[in-house]
Length: 138
Image 1 (cartoon, rainbow, N blue to C red):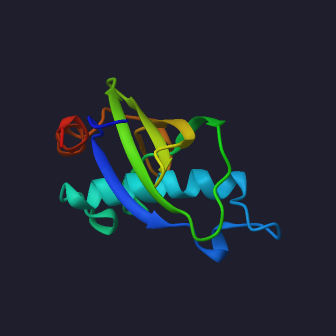
Image 2 (image 1 turned 60 degrees about the horizontal axis):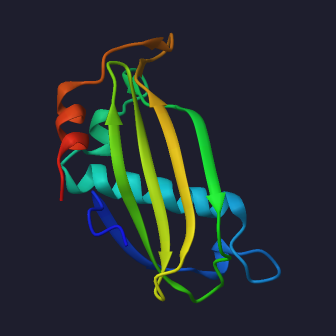
Image 3 (image 1 turned 135 degrees about the vertical axis):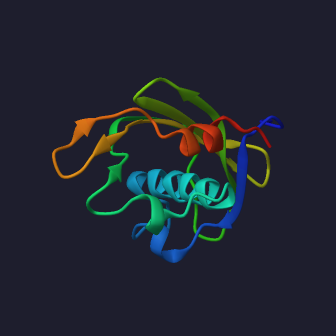
């Protein structure tokens, strides 16, 4: 499943990802997705520190959705994947899947980001360098 993923990050579910029952807390799953997105940017030579300065570009998430299909437990080996990037002029949508080693899908999620300039948070066009990085395939 998801052989056409845009980017894949393999990982183990850690103690800090889970709650007292040893199951990944819902917000932890979304954090795993965001970590995969950041790794994608770094792999495409988009340096987080250089390109997202306090007085420059910001890419806040304005919408998130997730479908939780199976629990993630401490010690599970998983693949966190960016499965699709859809680009608009000032916003983009990233789709994700978290898949267990068994092939079972644990989560599908989607985040919508808007390009804004700080400090006034005025929407701006997605910079060309970022647009190129997000439109590349594996």
